[in-house]
Image (cartoon, rainbow, N blue to C red; front, side, top):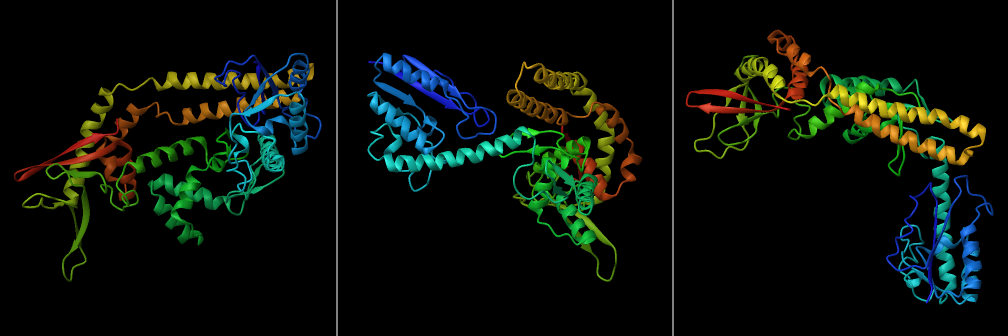
Length: 451
């Protein structure tokens, strides 16, 4: 008994499959690759398929293994002709995968792709192949656009408009987006930035829309595709790389805070925890009758003690927090073993430069005939996506001069000159949690830093 296998794949749509994926003892594997060029009828050669037919005519074959029926041809008619060729040679076809998701949903439950007799219902089979090939042609068209770094289909994000080859900054709406980012970077509050747009520009957006703006690679000059690939520097950015890295740090920091405290007006909101009842402490305001002055207190939100833990004046805790951070932050930074960020950045920059050098060598290779245009386009696309991954890692690294920053913020006057929103921003850059330790009539604070 002779068993052979046939593989067909498109490098633009999937990695080249392993010839040993079958798990069976295969006498021979034939494999064809689609051309990287835009698919045109009759232009894709299948030399290995022709070799398969010639070999089967000289050496009888019992079974042919394929992954999906649509791999036999580029149209339903071609698939039908090749099924007829196999039947004439007395070869039984076994399909190992069912390509759900690319088929007509009314036919997805049919048993025609489960290794049964595929000729039992040829009409349904060809209908299913036709649906699959249509989906494949659409995905190939999108893949060709990715090779050219063209924008994905759909409306351009707010702040941009589409041109023939890229996104172009819209001068009428881009300042709104830039102001939104500046407001978020200044105060670290997504809700506050959304309210700011509504007040200044009468531009009302949902909080979820604002979050999508903050995480959208388009505003950083990059293009992201549905398959997860990212290409850097495809168009003019609205924010710089440094601003984008700071946005990512603020978003990661805000995810660690209790709900609705990221935009709270007070700097200690969401940071203080009672050591006795382990309850988070919220800020309450109390005003005296017929007086304009109000008093702020921190009290536990879910105290289980009897009697309950009492409230403490907010200003007293704020003042001691500033004193403790000025005293403890330099020692904490000096004690922690920070990685050599400079060396890491140098290594990543070296890898990016090496890939950029390879990219610059492709045009001469095309001119000399060593590479054809199709192969060079695919290689350039892979290099650019790899560079985008490295640039993303580079942006996530902490600042090199952390010790210098710690010395600057350890001056009490620095904190006293800040507003409450600005102080909130810097507190959350360094402090993960503040633990309030009660001792009879006294209390003290324990600061837990981010590092």
